[in-house]
Length: 106
Image (cartoon, rainbow, N blue to C red; front, top):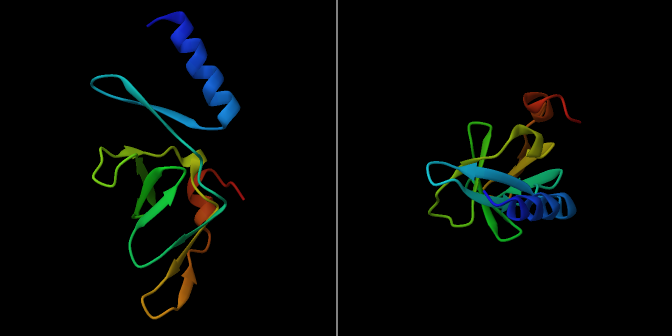
């Protein structure tokens, strides 16, 4: 890989606070903004932020730049502190203790 390209990628990641995740087998790189501290999910498991789609299932987050994929697993240090759900009737609930599932971040 070209040193200048690698250096510019690292600088871009540092200044934007984004995540870079390699995607095998072709080695392409995707940058996604971090999730906010609290994420509200409507009736489905999808969340949109910064031009990316995040998919939440079984307490695991995935991200892609298209709802159809390809999906990449989001590192746990980029998870939100809390996930809140809105049900179809307008009710709400939250997942308590969620932060303990990804390194104890509070």
